[in-house]
Amino acid sequence: MTKKKSKAVKNTVGRPKSIIPDEQIEQIRTWAAAGVSIEKIAHGLGMCETAFLDRKKEDVRISKAYKKGHAEGVFHAASKLTDQMNIGDTTAIIFKLKTQDGWSTVEKRLKLEISGNSSPEEIINAAIEALAKGKITIQEASQIAQLANTKANIKLGNTLNEDNKIRAFNRNELKEKLDISRELLAIYNQIEEQNVK
Image (cartoon, rainbow, N blue to C red; front, side, top):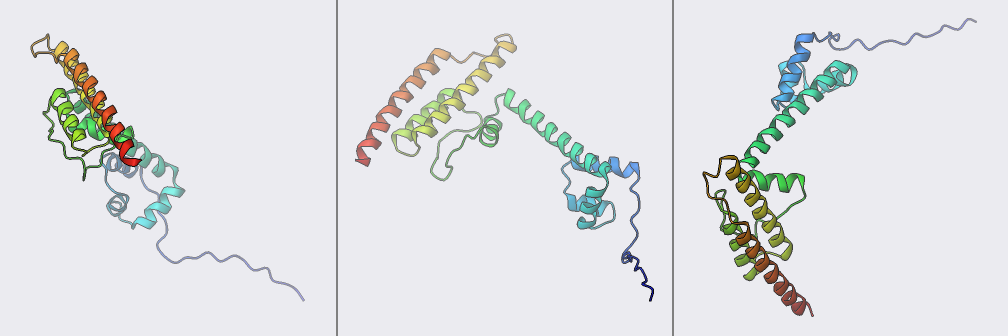
């Protein structure tokens, strides 16, 4: 008896894989930089998301183009955020602090009367008032004081850059407010400790 060796049979179901041309590789990078989802990129190339993910694993060019495009998009967004922070945009500063530096507030409890145009002094006053009313914790007040200090530094920097056309925020005044807020924080902390006992 002779044994027949069986040959592995390839599954030929589905369309054969085609090679993605360099123009489409560049398009993948462009779309990824613009924040287009993987699903939409796949559809733009005429394939389903699963097929695109499989191709991304198999073809290093696709993977590199996607990663590079994604990184370019993140860099562009970070650059725009930095521009906004440099002009003193409070919203941009808070976003950066929350997402990159672990800064947090409990927004449902924390209701300060501040806006993107609030001065550092107004931010400190709002924090002191909220602390006195028990709306925020000591840690939150400290974080808000850091925000006010950052905004004061930005405002001072912008003032110097504009040849003193805008009145510089009086840093001593801010320091006094910060000292007052620290004293209030200490008092509040003592009250909290007494309430715990």
